Image (cartoon, rainbow, N blue to C red; front, side, top):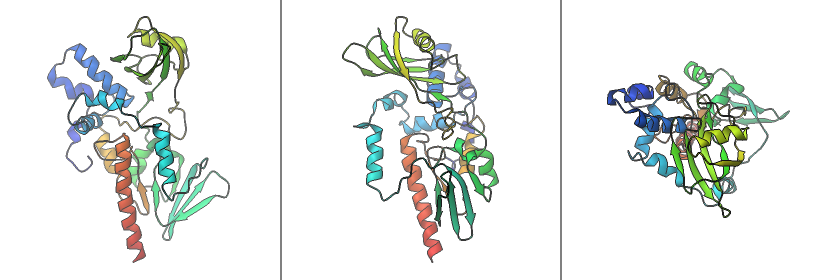
Length: 306
């Protein structure tokens, strides 16, 4: 996307759809799915990534719903374990990177584990862009990348997994509300169900640590529902994430992609946040980004060895 003249898509949902004069009920559905996918108010987020997803789904509105039905056999943990077991990578847990120092001879990476240092010729940085500000880069990153990585993006997705009873089977709901999207994940043998909800911090008044708050949100769709239990990942307060997948403010998405993909001596940035394909923020984007950085890094290593 960063190599195409598509900056005109870098506008708000309101501006993008204004020429169509949509009825309010249609806007509720469209804006609801935009909020559910971005975790941000549609009036603040850029339409560029949403337009890209339309292309990624083969220009089918159904793709926004049908894609959510696909799951890995054995879950994503099985996939991750297979990737680690099948590679030659050394995985170190509980090592938070605190500094990356570049010199004419290579790169030195230090973590918060006392005395632990890694030295290499090239370094791939694959952390969420909201967390880059916690890493001290010497010398500083390029001006464009420094500016973008120190400006927190607006992805504030809330994703509760809710065990409920007294609800029809196979439900799906969508609108601008405390929970912008709700769908059945599993139906259990005792007649209860597990729902997956999608909300946005800043839209509505939802407290995921409060059962009554979640029940009120669900009863706007299903008046008789009873919430039995809730669990949810807290990406927003986790310093390793500081938010969810990257969602750019309107007017900043195109510049962000261009800046984050600028060449940087001995450093290459990877991940769904910086991928420029139409699958940005999806697992396909991670794979695409991985292919790109492997090519760049391999080329850099080959040139340095000459």
